[in-house]
Image 1 (cartoon, rainbow, N blue to C red):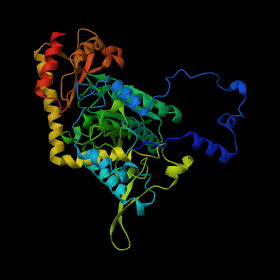
Image 2 (cartoon, rainbow, N blue to C red; image 1 turned 90 degrees about the horizontal axis):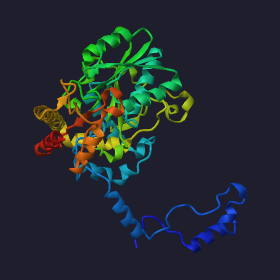
Image 3 (tube, rainbow, N blue to C red; image 1 turned 30 degrees about the vertical axis):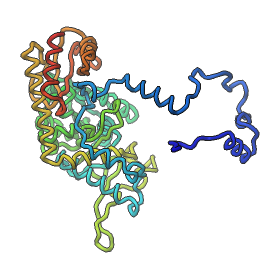
Image 4 (cartoon, rainbow, N blue to C red; image 1 turned 90 degrees about the vertical axis):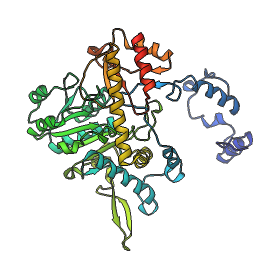
Length: 446
């Protein structure tokens, strides 16, 4: 019988106890006072045979809604996108699936080259000079960008648009507390960052101005105007960008962004209950020695043969925490590989076509909903998300949609009391005309 693990028999247990010189398992714990030991039985089910347990867990898993059986219009940072079949095939290879930190280039050329390709594609998408080999997720990448900005400018005030993802703002505030940074939110007007308020709030102590592109409400921010305001006080301009949207939108690097971060979940990484993800971090050349995480460089050996190595950072970045420039020393190499394989499989033309479908299908959904009486809260340029205002609580609407096997949009009232009864709807390239029309019909009926 093929076991997924090695079972332990009573004989095995006795042999191990004998080898360490004790008579019983209880004797192992004799140094722990009796009064602090747990006395009694745990309130859990008795052990089941593997076949029975597998059947029970399968039945439990079927109670979860999934995007194979339900139509999803839920986005808010995690999206239902097309994943080329080759992604899982490559990820399942043991040399990638079980790979360790590539400190030794002589045995890690495959992983190092994959990471190098990831960095290169991120630079091409963002219009930046240098990208690292990935971060934990988009939120931690954004927070690290704020820390880098503060260290580079030697200032302690960070201005962040209220139209940035609420979870990213919370992560930033947690990071900022330890570094004693002041975080100030800039209000949004009609779904985009209030330019006048930003101009009034920025000063000589501002380390960074942070915006999202497209922002959390789906709107496309005026990056050129925002960049000018940030640079007027020599602050860093940080953009958190959806990498798929950069297939059709002008890259932040063209607007003078100093740091561009984001999450690669749209490329080859399934929703999977919200994680794990893969953050990216790209900078201008002058910041390349300050970038957190790892960098892979291309070089040649003594015979002139191309090779790849970790570069531009001392080892203390990873093991000597007191001298490190960042709290992050690891990365999401496997998910970065998934993103690389997905981008490679799509190619430049395919990526652009996929991005265009997001724009077109979201526009179609928005117009059909408006025709059916829905109120679009913030009309204007957007990518694949937009906000509609309902005449009843979003959670009630979503319960009714769920009965029709439709996963509704995000309830914005959770993040802002001023947005009660507002739903953020995401329409990706996977949504068909029939599915969009069904959403319009059901929302109209509600």
